[in-house]
Image (cartoon, rainbow, N blue to C red; front, side, top):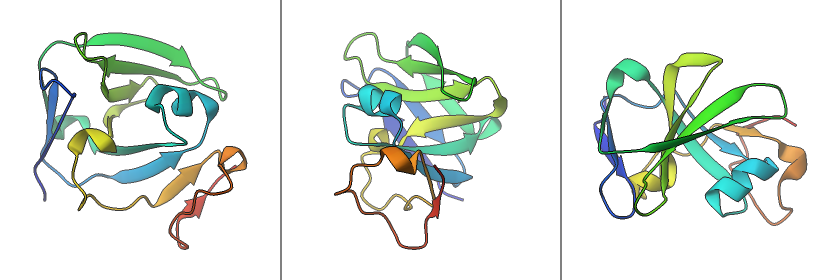
Length: 131
């Protein structure tokens, strides 16, 4: 079991995880690209009972292409998205992997919306892929 801390850029909003992630995934959907400001988003899911949140967060919700709603929590000061929750699965909290700022963080095992992946993005050969 690993304990890690993710935080926003200014450090006001933090989330401490007290377990290994149940899944690390990459999303290539257009909305995750917009949210992350990158060519894809990487997130790690943790059991809700193994996370501690500190600081103030603003929330914003959106419904994805498949009809599921996610509520994103971001710092009201610096604007960094640190974590989000899925209405369809309230047992997990998804944390933006970049918020950990840890180059030793486990690699993703799952990639979604592959049909929207930039052709120059390469991922591990054994990653599970879904369109």
